[in-house]
Image 1 (tube, rainbow, N blue to C red):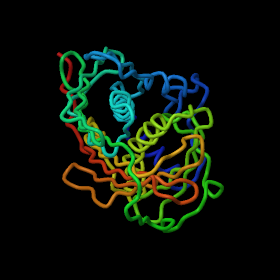
Image 2: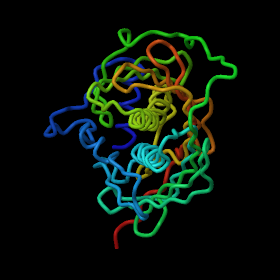
Image 3: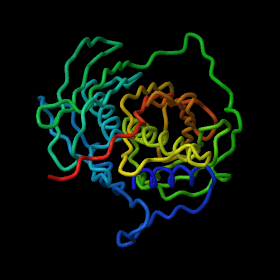
Length: 304
């Protein structure tokens, strides 16, 4: 089920076929939509004037666990709500333990430093007393340019009009995809017209979208090459275990923006992904890098 769903999703993004993901929840085939935009925004509704531990809500998950995409987004929002007047410069998150989306989660935070320009803190999300996500966050107030340079529009640049609409189960907003310019890459265009006019939420939604793109794309390309096979009873363990996101420019989630993700390496049960986020005018807004686990597990022992 997981192999088929991931391969199906990645193949659609790569080749532009119609994705058999139904909006109708009664349809049995495919991987159904996890949540609505209202639900995504609700779990990001976090306040900074709180005393830890902070209770946080979780999105329904077809895979059972708390979504790493959700944890990334919540960490960005919570950090910026705590450090008023500063924005996330870079965040490194790890997801060390399994979790359940239908069990309570709370967040704790520790200030390492807070000054006029910079702030550093650690956020830990726990379930049943065990850490399921931890991030080190650097925030800063804006400074004027001393010098400036930035990349030109990326290789193979096209706009969303040249990409194929996609009904993505984790992204209840406008999504269009096309093959990226390199092997194991995908161009993911999105815009969220109903998103609030809130730069913090825009950064959170960009990070949210960056996390689920890597594994399906790599699975699809290896499946097309005939590399993906499971022995009878074997199971696939596939999830992002660490991600770093760095923001360099402001982004409006309500406008089209491009997430380009590529994988330069897979092996030894791990998968490396890198990506950039661009505005529709080609300006770089963020970069990200993630490490995923991609390995088989032995068959479960027979029930006693």
